[in-house]
Length: 150
Image (cartoon, rainbow, N blue to C red; front, side, top):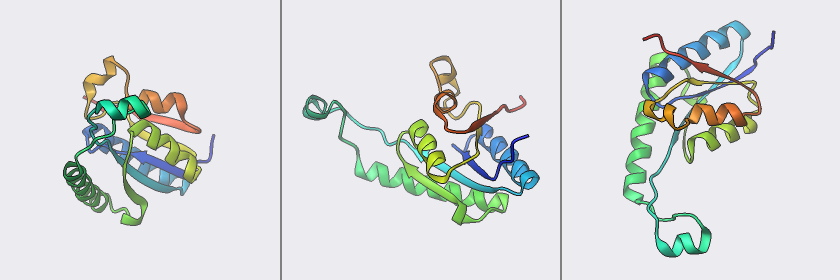
């Protein structure tokens, strides 16, 4: 059996991620491992013809909306960490594309396993592809996709 020492948990504040965090805490106790919890805020961008023509990417976002989303996510993360009895030092709220940020964070911290919910807030995306699916295919380590009992 693999000896997991660094566990990365990706949360989106859904029921699935709550169950995933609980499972990660169990794993951390079993392996005496450290936990890092992240939430990725995906900032909506709006295409501007000039930006798309020059860079190929839309480049306009609402600074006020970004600040509000980040503040709300930080409040939720603080409450979640307190509820679970985990240190705020092991939590991060990051602005980016969820699947890319989860994979790059796993690489940065040399995670042994990523734990996340099988589905998240956008459960309908399971028909089109999901963050979990993308992470599973690109991860540098094991991925545990936790299913909620419904």
